Length: 414
Image (tube, rainbow, N blue to C red):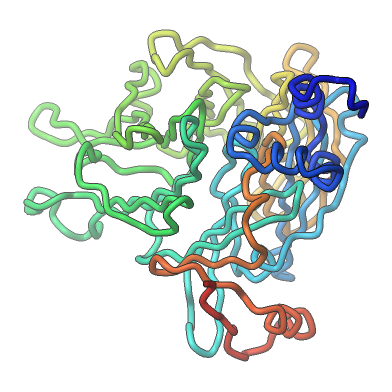
């Protein structure tokens, strides 16, 4: 780039580049490296095109595979199969928690001779192949993940309710145990204020939108001398670390089957998905909520495909089209032969994405490119407030034998 251009203009130009060439341009000059490595540049940078990560797990082979699809005018032609870093492949029973500011959060466990079963989360920047692992200090409850929009600090939230068999009315102490991990400090801490009520029961999946985490939940309310379940949404402000509640309209709040409701996001709006519960050919109704206010809940469209069975609504494209998992078999829950498709709600046309097979568990997550984690060393593991590095020879050993029982070799970083 010409030296005649003011540096401020150069900064605005390179800020519009995709993340991979941007990382390479750090070697062009000391000035560019200093700029790209700065916290302000990292905070301001965000990719312009949405990407979709498809995770398909063959449970009979215990095998995870990933496919990236660029969500632009080329969709779904531009597909890439990324090579996950070692910290991702070492996870067993891995599942996706969520994505925020371009980072993906995964959960699973690993085993070795010293730790029979260690639960951990992995934060993964898939574009630049950087990842960090975080050991959970206590058994997993309901995990949440988000990046604070003010500090750019990734946070993991672990919400652990008291045991189901205990009488909730007899609990006089704090009914929920909430722990928060900040990547900036590398440590977990407990949260004691503004916690959910003890009668609230969270669903497992979460959605993050504009600095808030959301979980679908049920609450027990007293009606006519008895207890009745009521559906609602529990929120968590990633910045202030305060919990809140979003009430649902009566038709959704009093749906007796909690399995008929799901939450997702469409661009920057919270979406509630309602199923009629029909086993073979269910109808899904998509409701969109504006500004976290249930009074602005509007029906967008219905999804119905009489020729195929919908197993779930997994994600939404930037255009608003839902991505579905479908099966063409009659016995949906006994024959696991599924496909990923895009549903056009007005024409009701289905486009197959070419990702299908038997014995699959599919998930899809949207994300934008980011520079977060580019300053982190490779093979970092955070455990009990300490940062450790997985030694290269341990990594090579794991690659030579995936079933080795040798102890993971850790050394404290200085």
